[in-house]
Length: 239
Ligand SMILES: [Zn+2]
Ligand SMILES: [Zn+2]
Image 1 (cartoon, rainbow, N blue to C red):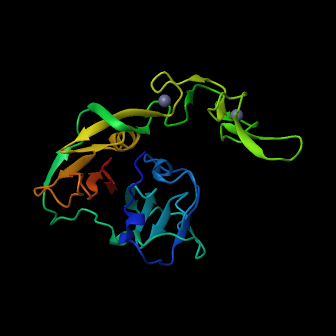
Image 2 (cartoon, helix red, strand yellow):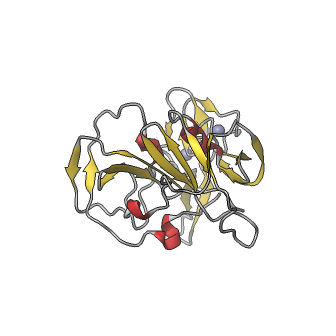
């Protein structure tokens, strides 16, 4: 699983006052899918937030921003990053705007989130977290003499942590696949690709220069994209 994040990389250190986006119907663009479903770490990225004229949604690996949505409520307690300092594409950006690439997956050694079940492992109506194991897939067992505890695979959900519906045939119920979408010289997770691909009129900025690479040759720079009504950033995969 790729864990690279432009937030954790230290690019965003400061906290600024913010306003909480109220959960009114959002026209066209579903910002929630770009947020972090697990609220953890030093920021609360569990929902969109408004800042200096923009509304942002990010999970630390993908980020989008659109013109500030009209219905906002002040929330000074929520910890969010100063998203304005990220490397959003500007009019002067070096590169060539191109349509988002055609679907093309290549084998990838690391498991990345399944685009079909959106990492939920199961599809169809009634898919929900397993109550027996609280979605962990494992339950604690205890020796009768209190000698110790150990984890056992949950028999109710067969280690999946979810029940209902039917098993995703794309990932065989694993929630991840060993494939990645190709974009320029980089690879991105198929689930992120799916979300970005669905944005209206989406284009990406193919850089003129290769940019900063890690020792294995993987890009350390976010892929910049734009769409009708907004802009975005996406970290490429590394191994
Ligand atoms: Zn799947
Ligand atoms: Zn279970």
